[in-house]
Amino acid sequence: YLLNLIIENNPLEYIPNQVFKEQLTSKKNVSYLWAIIQNKQQHYCYKEKWEMSFYHYLPQGFVCREYIPFIINTISSWNHTNYIYLDSLERFFEIEPSLLEELLRIIVAKTEKGQSVFIQQSSFHYICLKLLETNIELVKTIYLHQDSIQSNFDCKRNILLAILVKDPRFLITYTNYVYINNTKKHRFGYDSMNLVWQINNIEIILEEVFDIIDKLQPYYLNDDYCNSFFCNIPDEFKKRAEDFLVSYCVKNYNNSNKINIVVDITRNTFKELYDKIILLFISLTQDEDLFSNVHWCVCDGMYSGDTIIGDIDVANWSHVMSVINQSKLGYKLIPIKNFVNTQIEYSLKSAEQERKRRFVSRW
Image (cartoon, rainbow, N blue to C red; front, side):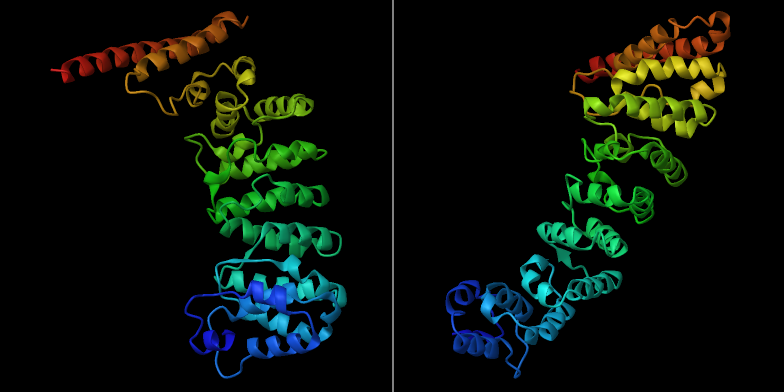
């Protein structure tokens, strides 16, 4: 049956997992099935997957160096978009410790040529355990490649954390890779990056990350990447995170783009810090132009059809004014208060116009 499938180029795209699992029980069967797989008359569909299945189900007593060159050839010939399970080759890595690195270099070369080879996540955990101590650079390269081609790679960022524990500056490399290559920025939501607070002195690195984003991307809208560092932070790290944002604001209050990063985070993710940042900012500068260039109020998000956006703007700017009124700077804040009042008046007019348009549209 297997020979017929090979002759017909495996039209069913069949992988004989069950056959190997049940029949690789004797030296005779092992030799016979291996000879079938290595049919030299023709190349057939999914030959490499047949070989990987054979390696996986080969009993321990038959694992030997004889297969090492074939394994290297299997990975070199791999041209499928399906996941590859490198941990299934663990017994061969024990025979030839350098084999894992050799296979990974082959995968790196393929990826750099534009041929995607997807490594299954359990395999990557295995790779990290094996190579983090001996060849972290190779692990980092593989991580960047796999993160860029797999939509659900390392969702909980456990692998990233393992790398950052060894080399915190990898966060800089990772950020540059994500933004310069424009790879899946939309994946950064919820609390996917709050793990960085488990790293000692990560504040120095995170400040560089913010500076990179300031240079690479105009900060007009909510940026999931920056927000993901501050979402659902465990209580034990909240004070550090707050101190970082406050410090970044103090250092960069005269740079509107950088302040917009902080304000966006406090508007969307670290909301309990929003009022404090407003008061801190106006204590550092009373310059109306600097204040007006910060996006204190942005109506992003989704709203029901009955929502009047102008009303939301009025509420938001009124809140900003109430916070400003808590300051004791007095007359120094008159230009900023005038600006905020202008925004409130504009929003009131906008809301009224929106109501009129809706009323007219009903008739």
